[in-house]
Length: 419
Image (spheres, rainbow, N blue to C red):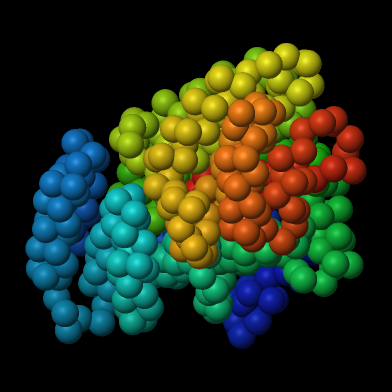
């Protein structure tokens, strides 16, 4: 069963954990839940955190986010700096996590990482708090395409396995191990026991859904994605133990990513009506959460453009004008560097998505004789920027048929990467 597979996998993530602390993996502590007690923290600090988060998102402006950071800085300075008790360390850790979350939403990922790294020094904080900070730290490193060697000594096995698995999936390994045989065994356990996977929530469930999706186990992946969306309780991340998370792993980001992934899955399965409806919903939610000019909106628009590309090919129709409009808007929002500049492809933020958008746009241009030269230059840039290990850019853009031997690209909207 998955219990056995996860137990083996967890050993790679928490190898130094004392055996007496190891819980049953399928004891069903949700991945976004504190694994012991509730949040033992200063209630005033929690109120200030939730006020700051609401303030920042009320206007979605640099000013509102700046004001929110001031509130959080005041909150942090009001916490005892010398105390070593659980409540003090939890309070300080959660303020730092809230700061990191808001910084990441404004694209200040390096600063967001710095805040999370400070949580490591709060050794008396709850296991669940430290796991949430670790998970967020890995997520931000993945979005920045940076290597992260953090490991967990905690008993948050299932959540730790999912974080490790996401790292491996980003690097082209369909499992939680570079060992192909072990990875294949793990995947088969997941596919045989998908009803157990459905009981996980949050970022852990999303990882399993993406893993199944990459294997083209569409019906199983669909169940997992739908369960994530249905379980959306809209809890505040920093007041409810069941939704403690931060950065791009917070519950609202997971919900957006699951919605986007479900839309992509429907497109991969040829259900274009459902795909368009779901991706449009993901776009609306992303604009509401981040603002209409945020790069994350460009990520979703890229997915929608690829859906129209796939639909046009499979239905023998044309949507060149729609695709071009979507690609151009996505590239603009992603703040893609000018492709004429030498070495620009190496400096692009969210380079996976930018390369995918520009590669798709290049194909649109290449079918128009008077714009073919421009398209060829753009395609060359996109191929140089593409860094995915599991599939080439040509494979990611190949929508010519539904042969299961062909790999499908999955855009993870949390981390702005192609899996």
